[in-house]
Amino acid sequence: MQRITKNVFVETGFRGCNVGFVVTKEGVVMIDTPMMPREALRWREEVAKHGTVRYLINTEPHGDHFTGNYFFEGTVVAHEGTRQAMLAASVDQLKEYLKVADPESLTMIGEFSYRLPAITLSQRLTLYLGDHTFQLVNLPGHTQFQLAVYIPEERVVFTSDNVFGKVQAWLHQALPYEWLESLKRIQEMGADILVPGHGEICGRDYIPEMIAFIQAWIDAVKGAIDKGMSLEEAQEQISLLDRYPMQAGSEDRAMLVQRMNVARLYEVLKK
Ligand SMILES: [Zn+2]
Image (tube, rainbow, N blue to C red):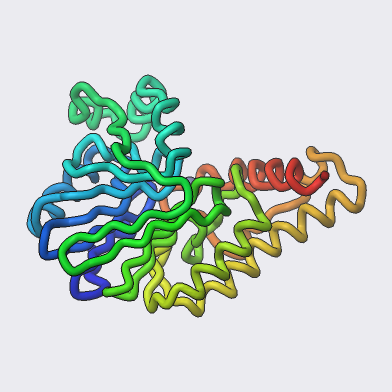
């Protein structure tokens, strides 16, 4: 765990997404939860040392950000689209996944259910707790429902998966042009520290690099479409794995991610 400012704590080493919490005078606000039960339980112990969890914000509709909600207290807040994704998430599928990834953890999940948001937003919502402000803003990109959480008192923004810190990006539900715009908005927020959804913590100066990476994906797939390539041909030819490695623990999905990214962009850009 890293203490990145006086009141903000982040863990970037769990399987799945980066998670964090903010300690306010009136309790703790969490941002996302660890996906693996063993790590969620460890994180729960860590968070408990700093107070009671009052709010738990989920930043996006993918299971690696919200599955661990089950292990935590606090009122869940998320985009309405994320709530819909949680309603559609399958407990059986999760159990099948854990059987392979960490079989012993099946004994830790008890009567597992996806703990849903009680409060949702579509565009923006501001939460006040103690002396802290949490500005939740919908910034479409990695998905349509992506939230950034900006905490001005700490000059920190949790960017969710609109930023991947020097690891491969997943574009399988991307809105590529909106993503470029959202990155510019993150840069203008006034935060000194960015906590990405995956990978290393960074500063605002990383945003141009992230924009260039998304642009490189757009250019590669657009180039293939302009040459008249079929989707299958584009998937055979395009890989941006030379730019960034896969996040540790996801190496086996490298080819899958490249193919999904190409498929999504091909569908969006061919129009
Ligand atoms: Zn995601």
